[in-house]
Length: 463
Image 1 (cartoon, rainbow, N blue to C red):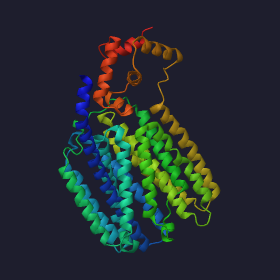
Image 2: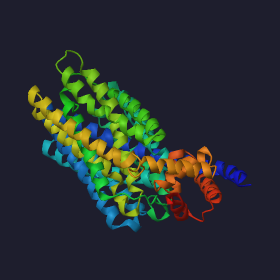
Image 3: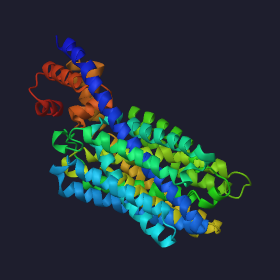
Image 4: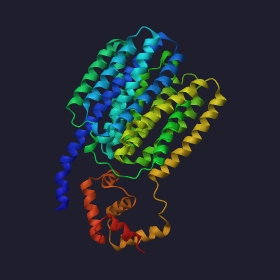
């Protein structure tokens, strides 16, 4: 009877989940589409007003810092007004302000005005990103979070490339692009207006996982150092664009990396984290190839491909942290914030040491070692089993499982219960519904004669 009930409820729940995931994907894709292409239009405009080396500093260092500042500001808003997250007017007002500054940054004939407009645009880009990344954490189940984010960014990257092909491949450099951005923004606002409880955390069930502050700090350092190391090796120099590199075409490979990372990350958070390590080895390949003739396009392709894995890892890492407890919800966008700080620092270092290979390799190596060490400290905290699982403990657990004749699936659930996982977390890790988890937990309690989880854990600890 219990199994049949689960099967009857599954299609309805699956339909609701799919609908929610698609709406979240659409909002994220639209927001990223007009913010990222707006950024490119600003970059192209600056190339008409000053030299490419200056544009590197102005966009990939200072611009990224303003994006990080926007994400930080939104995090403070979430932290202080946790119960008022459903106010759509705030989101819509930020989107409208962002569009005004996109226009100012793209049309100002004076360099100073273009910079002021551009930096305010980047600030609001960060705020808007904070909104949709919090939406990702609150609305999307853990087991779909990587592919929803990666797929949304990938779709946006491909569409931005298609847009760039218009008007003789100069569409994003033209004023017509602003009209298209306006249309995209109107669609975004329309979807938000029809969305119920856009960011209402009161209707979200947090996992209740214990997440020590030290683990959160390690997560921030990991994202910052990996992003820093990648940026040192290759910071997407604007001079390459002037020499004929198509930034939009390179983003197709960003889409490939995003989708691959999304699939791997949802299949296994461990595998997704390890895949991100490719971003650490990439800078050395870039430094080795930088003096080769005619390899710029290869560098851009590889740069965006590996960046896709890093992008998904740093977002999903903090999305998962944000939903462990309501007090951590403000951290949902901080993966991107730490990433942008690391990007800016890496770009700064790469620009400063671009013509000094020995110091560049030395600094990159130091950052690589630091990033690798911090990464595995975080990996052990998040993914390795409790150190208390000693050989004698393992034998005791095996005997307990055999004594009560637990099935293989019940054994998997039991292991996660021992780790302190909630029903929601067990559902995400085993890719089964919460109803199915509850069914297995009830069977375990019945077979072991325990009334609840506390009695179960006490029974496990009995000699």
